[in-house]
Length: 179
Image 1: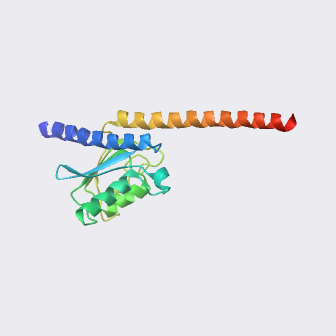
Image 2: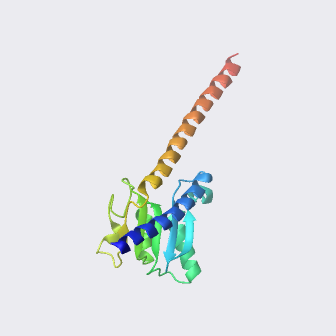
Image 3: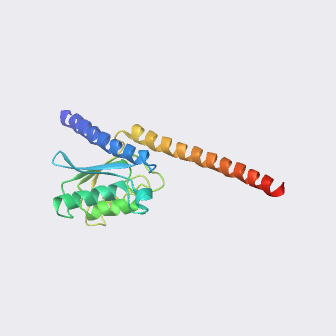
């Protein structure tokens, strides 16, 4: 039992680091998803979403962290590594996790629309593939979920305000043209 508690604490410790990365993404108006990769108790890579910044559909936190870890270690095989991510991996990221042979994936919030670590589907543990990863879900789930919810609520409010401003400008422009 004690070992299990120690593992929970360790998972939370590294998830806090992933949350720090997610907050970096949020600061630059990216979807707040963060990831860290741990090998032998040491963080070897950390990343956050950069899709908007890089104008790249593949700049997901997991992929950025995997690439960083592979470059750092000089190998594409991350067989003993553990990936921590604030949101359940999508199909693309799950594929990269399998291909890089990551041993274990720990995630915070579930993704009911595209999560491929057990919620929508489970690519990471499908025995039809030549590699499966252990999956731990729900670590600091509330904190991870709240970060995403707050971001998207703010985004909707900004879009609503922008729409109001455009409408107001249109009315002003029409008034000038009609007057």
